[in-house]
Amino acid sequence: MRKVVLLITILFVSVISTACINNLAVQELNSKAKEYMANGETEKAICRLRSSIDLDDSIFETHYNLGVALITDKKYEEAQKSLENAIKLKPDFADSYYSLAMAYESEADELINKNEASADSEDVDKVSSENETTVKKENKELSDEEKSKIVEKYNLAVDNYNKYLAKNPNAEDKDKITTQIDYINSQISKYNTERNTDLSSASSSPSSEEE
Image 1 (cartoon, one colour):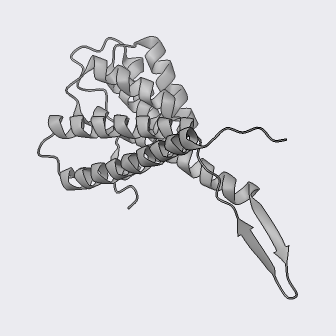
Image 2 (cartoon, helix red, strand yellow):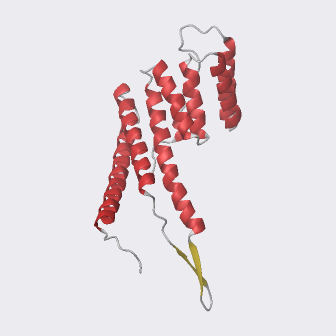
Image 3 (cartoon, one colour):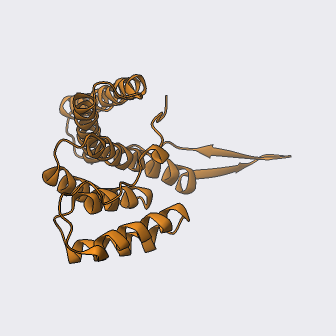
């Protein structure tokens, strides 16, 4: 099963919940960023949000919105930092954990997908026959380091999805999130098993020198 939680469900929040906003430019920049995101101009949105943080880095909405924009732009590590900043400023805002979980999950998925794409593009052996060309693809194995990183990011995703549910126990998407957590845990189990198998094979293989 693939991701059931759609990125479109991560929404920008307006700068209205902060008790005191002295700089109207912060509101204007966030509003403009929201317009750019709606028009698919993610880079422009990110630029406006960074400018907003330069003006005032104490507004959690700006950090949250920047995290959402960075996820959309597939800059997952930067998104994680922005969302962690949002959580520090407002730890009870449930959607920050949801978005952070997606950033971690998407980073793990990207690593897997890049590996598969690399196998498709690089490891292709064309064998000619009388009337056709057969394409053989060799699977490109993930390294132990890559598998460890995938497991790490997936674990962080599960942790933050659970925090989201704890902060929002009556969430309408609770069943979908629970299903997604189950799927991610199955992936964690899969890659942990592969890592352990690789380690066992490596330790049991006799070392020999070629003559």
